[in-house]
Image (cartoon, rainbow, N blue to C red):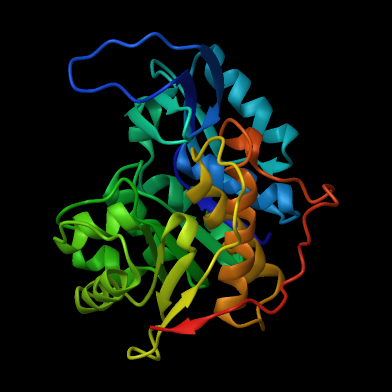
Amino acid sequence: MEVLVFGSAIVDFISYVERLPRLGETLKGRKFATGYGGKGANQCVAAARLGASTAMIAKLGDDSWGNDYLEHLRQEGVDVEFTQQCKNETTGVAQISVSDGGDNCIIITPGANDSLNREDVSKAEKLFTSCKILICQLEVPVESTLHALQAFKGISILNAAPALQNTPIELLKSATIFCVNESEAALMTGANEIVNLEQSKEALMKLQEMGANTVVITLGSLGAVYVKSDKKNEFIHVPSITVKKVVDTTGAGDAFIGALAYFMAKYPKSALHQQIGAACRIASYSVQYPGTQSSFPNHQDMSINLDVENFDWFLL
């Protein structure tokens, strides 16, 4: 097995509106859709669609949404031996609003995701000893995520989302790669905002000072920046391709994480800037289509080149 995901599975309820509402305002939506989401499952499906062998450790509710989600993961080729439906629990849900400009706001009700625990790590010991890459996020209990990271001996990626203002030091230290977007990085480092490369460099430095190893910050249309654990003074910017029309940014970060895990598993000898550049290309593809998992490319889509090629990179 190449990619193991320990994390969330959530059903998306998506409203498409002209713009996002202001505080206390009611708007009329123009379209409604449901979809399969949750950062963990999104990242797992993103990796699976690109061609990685994947497994998911997650909790679903004992309801129709849980039944449907389990079957959906099977259809995506995900190993669901350790994806469990919990009695008397509801499947997690996310209420998502998406504007015509592609911006979004999201409210998550975790449901069964809050039941994921240390025992689920022990039960899946064979996966923790055999998989190449582990992906975790923060939509399930932090203690469980920390235990999963500490139990894994390969390369681990922690997507620290939703961001914690006071992130435990052990959580920062336990992941091989610590990845957040610009708003999450700002919250975690106490910055007012991160809107340019100089501010992102300062956030990289701060996150490493806080205990993180290799740090990646995704910057939307600007691509991503990173600093490696063994080259703490070398801050690198990997630009993204230009997208003509952004349709929906929901799930773009998850497309990036899943793709990064895929490229790291498939091309372990490639430089990190190449793996990140290739992952940025997958994320850029996803924002051109509506929905979350529905926007992720499939390895059979010949318009996507899955080889890790030379990507531009610049020292900050």
